[in-house]
Each structure stands twice: as C-alpha cells, then as structure tokens.
Length: 103
Length: 267
Image 1 (cartoon, helix red, strand yellow):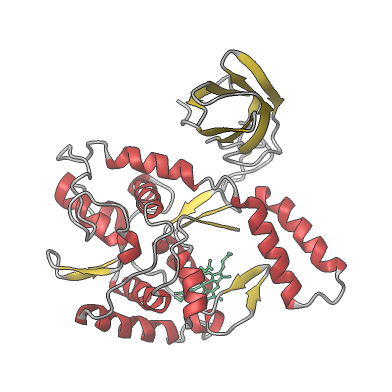
Image 2 (tube, each protein chain N blue to C red):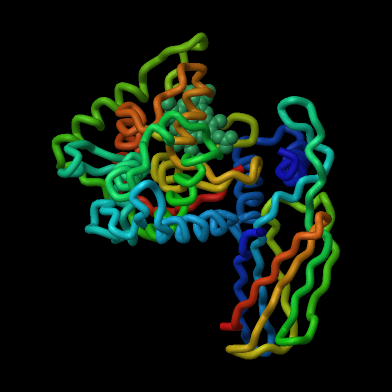
C-alpha cells in the first residue's frame, strides 16, 4: 500500500494555500539497477485536489517529477475546518488519497 | 542522481556565466539553490514513518519504544537529540542517538543490535533506524546544541574525537581536517564547513541528519560519517563504534550553542 502524504492547508484573506508532500519512488523507467537491468517505470500520472467536494486542481504528472514530490498551490476560498482532499494515481494503478482540515 | 541534476545544472550554468566566478558568488548560488528546495523537506515523510515505528510493538518482546530513555527520562523525545551524544549511567558509556536507540531496541524490544551494526544502509533494521532518527531529531529543531562537556567521559571522547579528526590515513593521506579544517573550501558545488571552528561545526553538525535530494534518502549521522570515511579513502567504520561517537562528540562540542536545524536538507 502506498505511504501517506503529508498535507497542510491554511486559509488567509480568502485564499487557501495547500502544501503536499507525497511519498513515491517516481521511477522514470530509464534507470538501470546494479546488474544492468532496467528498473520498470513507476510514477504518479494523475493528481486531483478537492476543496470539500469541488475539484480545485487536477494535474498530470510524468516521469520527470522527482522522487517524493512536493506540490504547493493556492485556491480562492476555503475556510477553517473545511476539507481538503488530495489523491493521486500512478501508472501501475496504485492510488492514495489523504484528507486534512484547513487551519 | 537524476532528480538533482536539473537544479544543479542550472546553478552550474549561473556560475559559468559569471566567467571568472569567484568563490563567494558560487556560495551565494548554492545558498539560493538550497533556499529553493527548502520548502517541503521530504524528511517529514521519514519522520511520519518513524513516529509510527516508535509507537508500534516490535521485536521478540513485542514492545514499543515509548519508554525509551534518550537522556531526558523515559519516553521524552523533545530536545533529546540536541543534548546528544551524552553519558548514560545505565550503559556506562557515551552514546550518540543511534547507539542509544540500539540500546532501547535491545532492552525494550529484544532486537539484536547486530541487525543494525552488520546491516546495510537503506535496508532492514538500518532503514528502521533512519526513520526513528528522523522522528527524534525533528523534535529538537530550533533548540540549541547543548552537549555536556563537563562530564569526564565526554571529555575523554572529545580528546579521542579530536585525534581521529586529525588522523591522516589512506592512500591520499587525508584526515577529516584535510577537507573540513579550513574556511571557504568546497568540493564540486558543496560548501565544506570548517568543522574545527564553532561556526562551521554549528552549520555542519547542526544540519545533520538530513534528507539528501540527490538520492532521495534520509541519512543519519552514522551514515554521513560512514560516507566521509569513504571520501577519506579509509576503512569503513563499524556502525556506532567508539570512534564514530567520538567524532560526533568532537563536532557537537564545537557546535555547542549553535542552532539545531535537523532534519536538514542537502544536495
């Protein structure tokens, strides 16, 4: 199972800032291991962030994004106690979603 | 490597465009690069894992580490690593964080220290250790380095650490001081702190353990030292051996009073 993300969301002056740290190997599929065998590609392909039930960000990720990706973004609106959910899916079909309350 | 190549390439390009780039502007550019990556230190992922491990019953005795005494009383994590290495009465030795955690794992959980000592970095119990370290050191962030140099055993290890620091060996006849004994030195694009002075020791000691962007790994101080023995081209030190602890005492004593910035974020 995929490891949890660390999400922080804070609202200020009508804008919510979200910072997400994801735990993922983000293998490009281009690297070789010590014995010369290709390490299979394994990376996040899609990411969706929601404020309560409304999608506020959707993104496509690819193999050029680093291991343990970090993402920060802002959206208009959001109040203390509201839910922010971030979810991703990778090329192997694994997924992970985590939720926090806006502080 | 691949992940760090891009930002580093940019920094390198900036440096080159200065033509006869002076050392100062390079250091500035390194500082700029560090600033760019400072937000969102992935150490947090290891810290989360470590916290979980701390509270999970493990080992033959199926116990957690919640009663582990890191010198501030059983279970107290806050501020503990800022005061380490330190002398522990129960073991009768000066211990760094990792050797102390080995004691806790052995006495509370029944986990054989050999699994870590003879293990490999980034796997098995050494990997567990790294996560535990990430958890503990995060709880000293913002504290001051406060090692007790009035303790006689600490003084003894300091003297040993100093000798080890200046001990030249290997095919290149390097000592730690060869690379870390002067101001303003660097290798590739890395500043090499002068660990023989307070300022450099505070910067170096104070920012380890750390997450390394170049390999996406969290490195403990034992890991850092192990790799510097390699850079010195000398024999690999035994994990948590006296010489590694002595070197830590030497650096921590020099850094005393400096800010704890752990977990750090490094190239």
